[in-house]
Image 1 (spheres, one colour):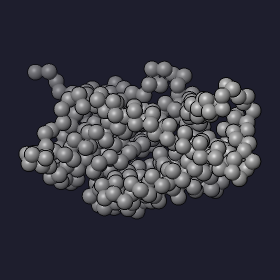
Image 2 (cartoon, rainbow, N blue to C red; image 1 turned 90 degrees about the vertical axis):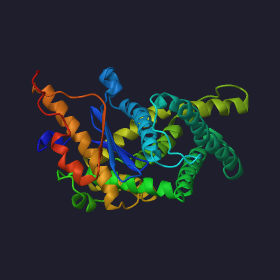
Image 3 (tube, rainbow, N blue to C red; image 1 turned 45 degrees about the horizontal axis):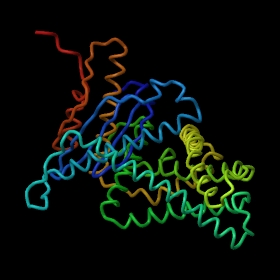
Image 4 (spheres, rainbow, N blue to C red; image 1 turned 180 degrees about the vertical axis):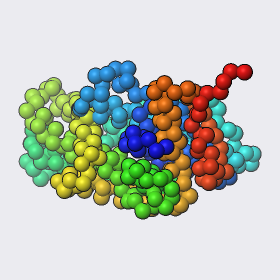
Length: 361
């Protein structure tokens, strides 16, 4: 895959259970190490909603689209990796755990949607109420019309987020996911540097990356504070009842997450494009520092999984490019293969993406 266009291709990823998911412009790939030590690789075509609704890719709108698509893709990949990790392990009755059944994915939304709503209410509601109390105690009780409230609101959100990360990082399984997160960053950095996707090349790169989703959350908090400072002080009371007015303001702040996500995404894009600029590096420094909490140095076998995932995504993107260029290439639908180890995957990489279609017999 020496195509210069492929070397410049933007790829994003996410760590999952014992694996890594990578997303290219037109495909998704997930590589997971199963309990036997084998590499299970799944790749499939994918299209963003903005390919069908073009205005959603406009600046300041695309951030919200990417946020929700990333959540959906990430949850799907996480469920898939959990199924792979469970295969061959003993169940409660001592028998091997059953393989994943088709239809598992849609039921995931019954868990995801309530969890997301609850998280938004906690992440928005608790800081709002606590900030009101602190503002009344130390700031004279100006509430949402004063700047102190919004600073307190942002600080409490940041403390909640950091506290949550520190709490879950005590779990062994989460620490392994954080190591795969570091492997994901290193493999993407090797790709962006135009290097061959080997463990040695990925190992030398930093486990921190300016386009990390953790930095995105930090920017959402900071930009949210600035936007709320500009909007809420000049907003008249929505209703006369005090507690109901505060509840409506919390819902308004949730709705404002859409433009906030859009602005935050533009900051992430700026960081990725001009990451060597001293001013941009200063701006993204807090996001990089935050990644110390959610990444760990990966082992070589974890790097192998991440490299398998990104190589698979790039291979499918290359196949798509060749097909669009008019070459006689058949790009298959979703598929899954199992490799004994990373060496076997690399040996088979030449045939991993489709070659010329076979002549009919």
